[in-house]
Amino acid sequence: MALPVWDCLFCLLPLLLLLLLSLALRRPRVRCWTRLAVKAAAWRLWVIICLTLELPLDRNTSTWTNETRSPGVDISSGSGQASVGPRLICKPTALAKYLLRHCGSLAKPRLASWPGGDPHLQTLSSLLCEQHRDTLQFTRDNLLLRDGGIVALDWAVGTRLGEVGGRKRWEGRREHQPGGKALGCFTATPPVLLLIPESWGGVTPHLKVLCHRAMCQGFYVVVFHSRGTAGCPLTTARLAEFGDPADLEQAVAYVHSRHPSSVMVAVSEGSGSGILLSYLGECGSSSHLTAAAAISPVLQGQLWFETVMPPLYRRGVLFQRKLQLSRYASSFREVLDVDRALRCSSLRDLEETLFCSSAQLQQRAPRSSISSLNSGLSSGSHSPQGLAPSVAWALGERAYPAKDWDNYWERNEPLRDADEVALPVLCICSRDDPLLPPASTLPLPLFQSNPYFLLVLTDRGGHCGFTLEDREETEGGRTGNEEAEGGKWSHIAVLEYFRVVADFLKGEERNGVNLDAPLEYSQAGQRSRTSNVAPVRRRRANMMRRQRLQTPEESSVDAEEGSFTWRRSYTR
Image (cartoon, rainbow, N blue to C red):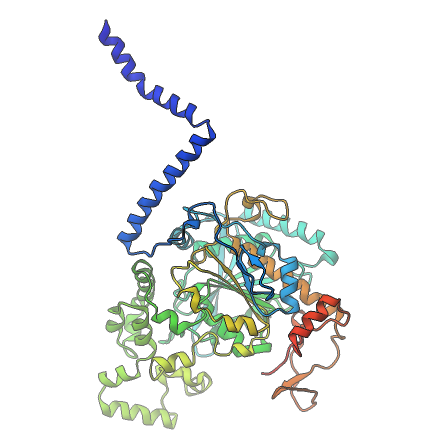
């Protein structure tokens, strides 16, 4: 009789233990201890995984607890006031002050703590974890370039349910905008958002979430794909260099021709900032863009290629680049050593093999053939990489491989023409980004001296991560899940930044000089009017003008700015 009783008690023992555990967890102190114990155990397990995969550890305990790091100094105003949120590092201009007053997403967002806020988990989720798979579709335009190459433009469209929902949201927003304007922009037509993916191509889940959110806010969204990436056909034996904006310039002109009355803005993802910043510098004030933003940008290309990346990420990036190269290996064998490129074990070696191969070609080919090739090039009867002489002349030095590594970056460094940028550029960076060089290498003097560059620096966020805590209360009264589709703070900040900049420029236009008045040109640092210069394209949406009536606060800002004016200076 005793045996069946003991058997019953033994069978009920797990249920009794669960009952006792549930009763104990009702006490706040026990629940807190249990949560800390589970987090500590998970943290130790994650440390072992990171050591196994050779991933650098984020040793700041504030990333896996709810504590925040000690207050820093807000460099944006130069006042020395404490700041525990994102730091806006920029020159104290009227636009910077306007952003601080009206861009609520920049005011201390609560980014996710560990484990959701771990830089590696955020980076891997932004690159690998698929979202909005059923609500996003793309229709492709293949654009033929001047040199015979092709780039792809993917226009984001939704499923039937997604399109209806997006249209209703857009119409609702338009009804609440004064005068039927779109998101504070200049025209009643929806603005165009141009997205530039990573340099190795492809639409990441992070980019799809941004596409989905922008479509819900009424944007026309188009994704730019370089030649040979994301299934774009490669029709010439020529790949785009890291900072070559020629293809992007033609793509922007094509998008503008399709939507001439729409305001156009651009966002780059990670290493895609190389061609975006190069385009803004080379085009200057003649760009069709009104504003731009870069999420986790590569600001110094040579430093990024020379900095050792964690093995997991380096192998992933190399795999993507080599996969594109192997697809067209037979076409490239005449112009470069494909086998050597496929054997490269670092990003620098691969980039140098692809674009700095003049010395390598001389070693492979006989001297007679090289001399005959050089004589043919000088006489104009031959052209490099199968290009026509006229096309080679239009491409200039980029029609030929770079002489060496330093010469390659002289013409491809993203910020080489930063002084020519003539529109606001917001860069969002994180201190714990595992794919970029340390935050101490950021070119802070550029942001502190150039009025067009603004840097938002956060303590955590990973590479293109910036995940928000769940159920975060925002200024608009919505929860974090409702306000942030996908929970990405960078998406909220970028789209709100475009709205605030458009409002600022609209105020400058409303309070400025008559738009039909003649434009002023700047040459050699002096502004003068001339009738000999060819007329410059006038775009009402892109004009930036100083206000006539200013408040005392704005007058003090102007004193700090000196002779700077938001009127565009047409230098090219």
